[in-house]
Amino acid sequence: MGAWPGLIRAYHDYLDVPDEHVVTLHEGNTPLIPVPGVAERVGRAVKVYVKFDGMNPTGSFKDRGMTMAISKAKQDGSKAVICASTGNTSAAAAAYATRAGMKCYVLIPDGKIALGKLSQAMMHGATVLQVHGNFDDALKLVIKISREHPVTLVNSINPHRIQGQKTVAFEVIEQLGGKAPDYHFLPVGNAGNITAHWMGYTEWHKLGRVESRPKMMGFQAAGAAPIVLGHPVEHPETIATAIRIGNPASWKQAEAARDESGGTIDMVTDEEIIAAYQHLAGREGVFCEPASAASVAGLFKYADKLGLSGGETIVCTLTGHGLKDPDRAIAVSPQPTKVQATEEAVLAAMELTE
Ligand code: F0G
Image 1 (cartoon, rainbow, N blue to C red):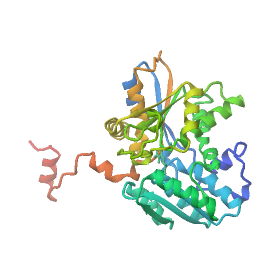
Image 2 (image 1 turned 90 degrees about the vertical axis):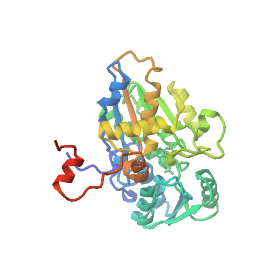
Image 3 (image 1 turned 30 degrees about the vertical axis):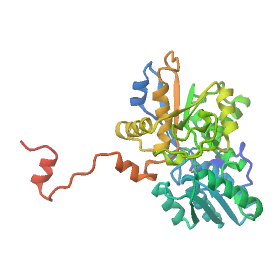
Image 4 (image 1 turned 135 degrees about the vertical axis):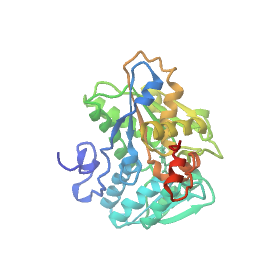
């Protein structure tokens, strides 16, 4: 097996970047992991897998879009990029921009950003601006600034981002041996990723590379569910800070993916998200960030509503790694026990003494 060349080179037939402009950290090729404990809870002998996109180089699916956006910016001669972010986009933008020798400006909501993500943007040398406002406020600002100044916008309204992100569907099809799943669950925030998944499935379906397409099952957090409610949410709130978004940029495209696939966009509560997050880490050994667990929380919520006849294949995308948000992990877990450095004390704490 040769070394994985990164997704632009692996899927060069479907992504248009001249080789000399490719900026890559060899993203993509993430594992598709069976989760038997989830399947057991769903019942009816279904097969359930998680597509663990938290295994990308900066720890989230954003690398798929960012390798494209930064490569294209480089091809166009851009010297600087800008984005608004709940954290992961800024981490990816900062990493790929520095690799390409570009300046990177990131606008993040003040306070509500997971520490791992903030540390990445800082370490990769981005100019980090914490705005007194939420993601939606920051997005409006970067759109305006990128129109009026020589900085390239690398949020998912940049079409190259969606092109890169569509490769997740190609990988799932290949990992399932040339088949699409029956259902694909994923979290929805700014709605670029559900748009990209559907684009990927549709592209290979049109080309005859796969016979069917999955029903797309998108889940917002209950306190940040504009698509479900049918109107923007002015003050979105959820512990899943990655998807704390009240007015998604790809709203229409997400609805199209839902309707064309015969799927659903619904919401899950923070409690349901935490329960799925703990199940994945505690039972399956897969540590994702809270927002990612919205996909599996959605599957638990819908298990009885899908009308499964048995044997279906279900994939849930886990968009980001659990290490992104160590504060939340520690807050929902039993705290370590402090013990004296003696065998007696350790054994007592292990409950191994008579
Ligand atoms: N999961 C994670 C871990 C995310 O970081 C995001 C989005 C999503 C899901 C939702 O994906 O926006 O394409 O619907 N994070 C963006 C960011 C907004 O700035 O990092 P989406």
